[in-house]
Each structure stands twice: as C-alpha cells, then as structure tokens.
Length: 187
Ligand code: UDP
Ligand code: MG
Image 1 (cartoon, protein in one colour):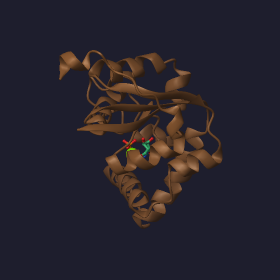
Image 2 (cartoon, rainbow, N blue to C red; image 1 turned 180 degrees about the vertical axis):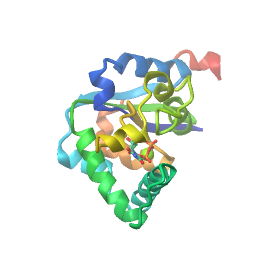
Image 3 (spheres, rainbow, N blue to C red; image 1 turned 90 degrees about the horizontal axis):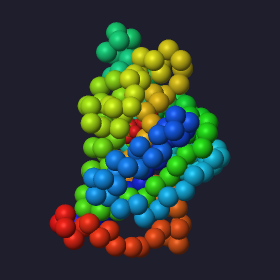
Image 4 (tube, protein in one colour; image 1 turned 120 degrees about the vertical axis):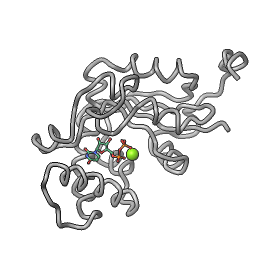
C-alpha cells in the first residue's frame, strides 16, 4: 500500500546540522523523497500545521497531563485547555528558525516514518530511532525551560493527518514523480 507522509526537520534539527542525517535514514529505509524545501515558517503556516482540531488538542493535552502526573504534579484543567496552551508553545517552537519540509512516499510510509522518528520524548525513544540516537531531551527539561520538548523531527501521525499536513506545506505541483530503481529489488 503506497502512502505519502509529511516529515519536518524542526528548527533544532536544522540548527544542529542534522538535515542530511535525517534524510539519509528515511531514504535508506526505502522511502522516496518526492518533495523537499527549506522554509522559515510564519505564524500563519505554523498555525495551519498545529490546527485548532479538538481531537488533536485533546491528545496533546492528555500527553502533557500524564507527563506532569508522573512528576507528581496534578493538572486540573481539561485536556483541551492544556492542549491549547501547548499549541501556542509549539507554534513558537516551529517558527523559531528554518524548517526542512519533506514529503516521503512508499509502502506504509506513515507508519515507517513515525517509527524512524521514535517516541515523542527523546529520553525514552529507542536507540536506532532519530530521536533516540540524536537527543536526550525530556519533558522535564522542556517544562523547566517553559517550552515544548525539542525532538528534531515531526512525522504525520496517520494517513488522514498526512493528507491535511501535506497541503499545508506543499502545493501539488511542488511534488515530483520518479522511479526509485532499488524498489524493484526490495519489493
Ligand atoms: N509536545 C511536548 N509535550 C507534550 C506533548 C507534545 O512538548 O507533552 C511537543 C513535541 O515537540 C511533539 C509535539 O508537541 O513533537 C506534537 O505532539 P504530538 O503528540 O503530536 O507528538 P509527535 O506526533 O510529534 O510524536
Ligand atoms: Mg503528532
């Protein structure tokens, strides 16, 4: 099943000189780069990326709540409200420097790109993943510094999320079609 997914190398990844390292990992796993550009995103673009979608706000809010509870801190606010607060942080983080946006195509592209990125929190991300190999950043450090966890990359969480995120960053005519000759040997 061939899919497309959106990956971002976030400002910390670009600033650390990790563009090539990240792209290499996606390419060598067998995903085809069909779109790629560097952008300094403005507030509108990052607002379109981290949408005001209730489901997403609830999920991000819940993650934040759980990580606070693990530290023995209780948050009484509803998940959505916490999610809105985190969204503002995220928008500032993503707009803090240049970002490299990629559209990757391949079999199970959404699932594979997510796996290559690893867990949201680099501290617990498994070795072998981008976040697990290239960072020890944690929710605790993020909270102390009053900012989101810096985790080098973003990858769409589902086929539906990928569809909408690709439209935010790319127009259809910016995507290229070509053969990955190694696919004939892999598949
Ligand atoms: N994030 C955070 N604290 C949290 C949850 C998320 O700092 O408790 C940040 C982190 O940078 C993450 C982004 O918000 O990459 C989006 O969150 P999501 O749950 O979508 O994680 P991802 O899909 O990136 O793994
Ligand atoms: Mg996500």
